[in-house]
Length: 69
Image 1 (tube, rainbow, N blue to C red):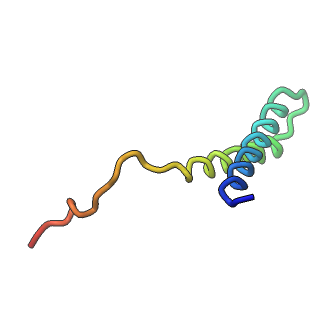
Image 2: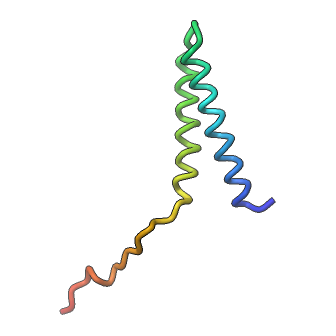
C-alpha cells in the first residue's frame, strides 16, 4: 500500500471517528465533555491532513516582487 493511499485512509478514519464521537455525545443525555473535546480535536486533525495536501490554484511568482537596482 503506498503512502498517499495510507494517508487518505487515515485522514478519513480520523474525520469519521471525530464526527461519530461528536454526534454521539451531542445527543446523549449524560454529556461527557472530554469525549466531545477529543472528538473535535480528532475531526480537526483529519480535516487539516486533507487540507494540507491540496495545492494552490494560482502560481505565485516571487520574481515580480523584487525591485531592480
